[in-house]
Image (cartoon, rainbow, N blue to C red; front, side, top):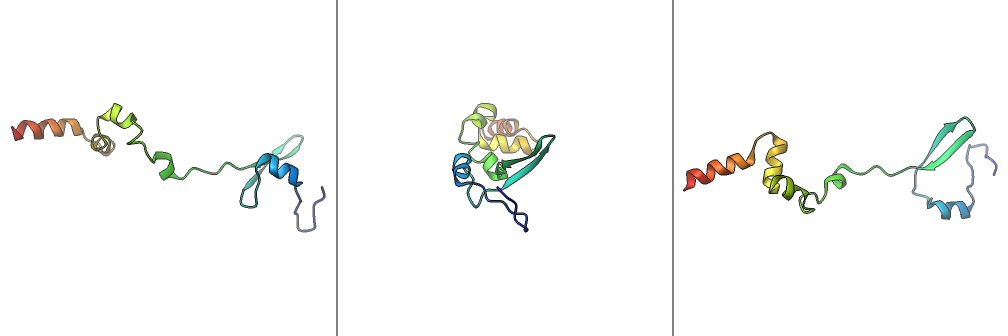
Amino acid sequence: MRITKEGQITIPAVLLERYGITPDVDVEFEILDEGLLIRKRDPEQHPVDAVYGIASDGWVAKEFGSTDAYMSAIRGYDYAAELRRYNDNSS
């Protein structure tokens, strides 16, 4: 492979296919003692994707009892205590 005047290289198709590098994939360069390493960059996970479905996966229900309790806990108050007070006052 040869680098063009514009600093571009052509990666052989067999390597592109083998490593799943398509035109829309970002790569990164790592400087090593031996030279440069070209690596396919892992796409960063969108923050919404990181938490999508957590309420339905079961861990919220196991840890907090309900989505409402989880939301209350991350907002800083005890939903279960509030619910008990509400139920005690409703009787």
